[in-house]
Length: 441
Image (cartoon, rainbow, N blue to C red; front, side, top):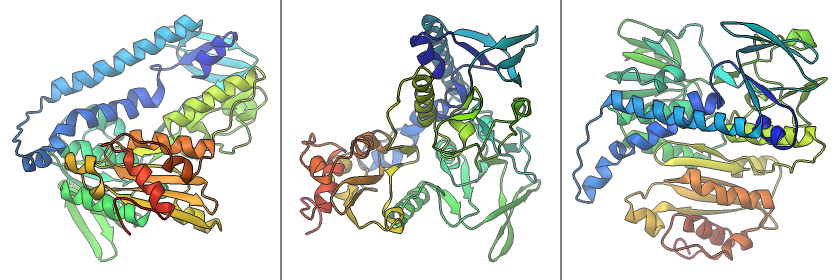
């Protein structure tokens, strides 16, 4: 994003890429994960369709599925390269390493070259975190990278980590036929996202109905020939596991960049900070390198912001950062949750609307979930939590409302087409204003 925008703004740009353009998201993250989520969705809805009187049998051709995902990623990758070329960006293949201020050494299998620039933008993404007692081997112990290559569908899969990546891959592999157990060290799923207690219970029940076992407050200890040894408050036990998928987070890829040559050191948690992106004279960091929420859309907007800043423009502030989790149902959040707002000392208005009262949700056999809006005392929208089909799409309306400083009245006055899922946001706004229509008094 930064390279393309800077080229559009008339700057001479060289993009150094060690592997593939598109970064973590396109090649090892969001795109292949969501492609697998979409491809396996019919397998996850067979029970719903059976209740409707439709018996659907499906056969999984793993090789063909693997090739389809690879082709999708490759097509998008080629599209990005064409856009960069059209913008005038020079793409240099190789591994970049800082030699000092304004100097970058690029190594490829065939040559080495030194590049000089007045400005360097670091956007090297992140890597899966490896546990010392469960090192990745690609056979018994997988990272998310291994899982996305679809090497096989194990009979039993234990996912270590109940965060976004762990739950999404647990969903995909359960649909493909694996017996899946999720082991999470903390006492809640999706730690760090601020999902409400209501959302936690809804998600846990949904996973249970999909026959995904969830073990909270459980520590993964070591792997044996037959399974994964775990520790709980009641003692030690073993869970059968042909494969253990470790998905306990990602770490900024800041090692091996030559940071010491510009007076910096690698940061396991990123540089963070919200006051600009400069980490050294003439050097800027964006995306996962900064730590915090490692989201592709965050990195993209940071790249655009840096590009504008480098030519003297003032980028617009980002007040709302939506997050989406592709489980079934999906989970999406933006802004402040109820608990977070109250901890900040705010007087809040909260409006909720259950999917079980939404006509479109019932018509699709999807009654589990809710819409929740949080506003301040004056009615200005602070945040939203959605647990619903298509929550990843629905959160955009709430994000726009938070970003623009809209009110509950603004949302309630907006006509929503019927029958649709977005009506749930409208109903939640009405509930927060004390005049609910299709639920409550």
